[in-house]
Length: 318
Image (cartoon, rainbow, N blue to C red; front, side, top):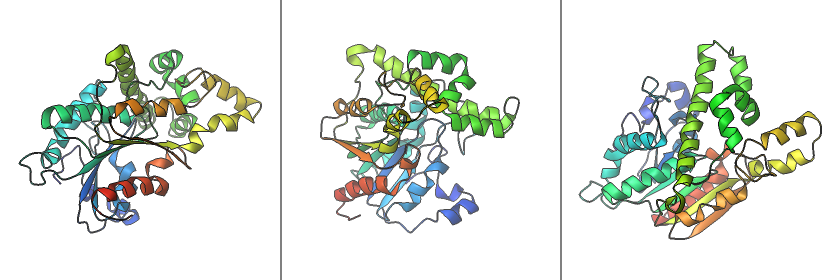
């Protein structure tokens, strides 16, 4: 597969990481293109990429200002990021297209979190320009493009009070920020920027999509669409319902900034995940996986669903 700066190769991986995640000899029969969410990069997908069966090649898009592209300017919108992705991934996609060296070769799409919004944007462009479509799509614990992650109050806080927002939305990130030195520390400031600017790209795209009204559903996948839901995360409301004191108070305050239903403090509720169904003309599959949002990206339980399905397209078992 042709690789570019935005579609990193395993050869670029540091030796220490290679020892933790050794690559295997491959004879690819199908490809899996992956689309990250906010504050994500290729190295965080390395476990998935190297654990894939030898008949599958995994490629992960890496955005500007992330990972191996630290000195490139931030995208100003998710549409701009999709433009970059199409450009850096085009050499790989063209191998599948008419006249390409792998003309007609099968491929699937996999996203994580809000990366599903970006995946839909790129799929639309791919269909329009190269007349290519994936054989199967996996939206891994994230909403479709027309489902915002935040309430209006949450979006206001993200724009006007980043640190206050992340104390509610992602306390672990704020703990990391403080341990790195907090305000004035270059690395700490870069961490918060990576999360906040990234989330704003996705949130503002979702809000623009909703504003399109009847045209919000701008693309339909002509293949089966699987939504994988991290059960431990979507059930967090049940955990906090049993708590009292500061922890319960925290969750009540969090409910005011998320876009899920009024009684939920989760980023997305089950209805949000099921809102993917109109985005396909084929079968819609809903899976709940016994893991959490961060772990599901490389989870063996997730891989069992994804690679079993991919194997079916090329006559391979998993």
